[in-house]
Image 1: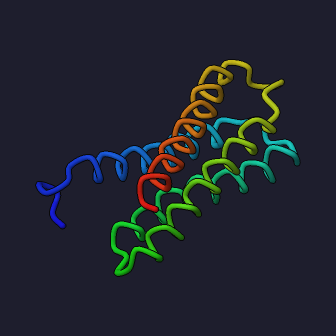
Image 2: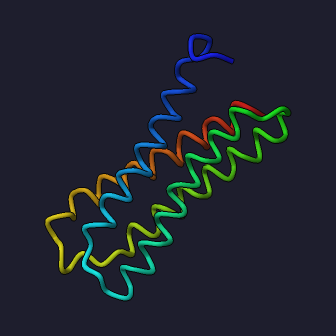
Length: 121
């Protein structure tokens, strides 16, 4: 499938990629506490996994594989939201607005992937 056949598919690919990039930018700015280092590692992994699994879903050969990858995307978006909520912003409240924005984006991605699952079955 080319970009011209289904442009929305690639818009979500870009959106998930940008989500992962924004998470990384935020984590770089955080106060380097033990908690933030560990939570930052987790949120980097889960946010990157959202995009990676969506790319895999687009390349899947079977409907069963697509469904599995989209389920993983939803799970990883939910996990990203969790880790974002745990990050300690006490030393860097200037970044609280970005954390809230990323938390909202994770929530929206969860809903998008949930909708894709409902429409795929």
